[in-house]
Every structure is written in C-alpha cells, then in structure tokens.
Length: 125
Image (cartoon, rainbow, N blue to C red; front, side, top):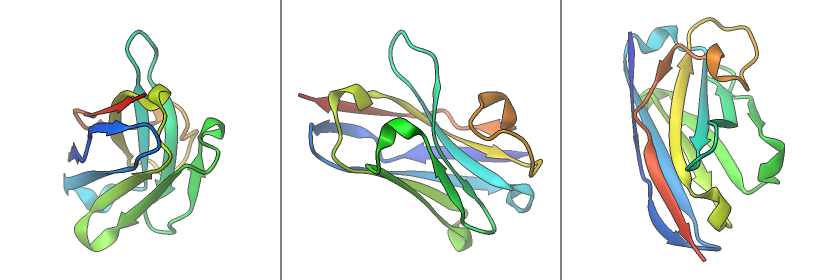
C-alpha cells in the first residue's frame, strides 16, 4: 500500500502561482509513475501531468501550455506541481496518484492504483 497526502492548495489571484506537494509513504519502492489530476465543480476529473519516478521524464496535458511543471524529490518521496500564471478556470480539487505497474496509459484515471484526498486550488479573477 502507498499513502498519498497532498498539500499546498489555497486561494490565489489570477496570474499568481502555487506549488502543490504530494508526499508518499508506505511501499513507495513500488511506485513507477506519479500523476496529478484535477476536478472542477460539476466536471469530470481530468489529467494534468505525470512523471516517471526513476527516469524523471514528464508529460503534460495540452491545455496547460507550459504553465505547470511537475517534478519529484526521490529522497523525500514527494512529487510537486508548480503552477504559474494561474487562471480562474484552474480552480479545482487537485489530486495526486501513484501507479505501481510501470506500463499503460498514464493520462487515464484507471491507470493509477493509489490516490490522495486532494487539495483545493481556488483562483480568483
């Protein structure tokens, strides 16, 4: 089992920045890929970004247009999401997720084995 705890959410004005953190504990040695998803009110949860835990390679949703950066600190078992130039439409509950299989389609929710509880990000206009 892997436990994930997100932090760093909050209220920010449009154009501002936030950095989300996701701390993993438990059987972290089994982690292959970690991802960030988000869910806005009344909408489905959508993919944001993922990172390969060992290689550090990353992949982002097209709509981000370079505004967000995913990174990890293997020593701290933590993945980060740096969010810049935030827009009101970025308002959502942000979740991190962990995959232990090492293969599949990492833009889909069903790929991931473990999920955090989420951290709220609210961007005011």
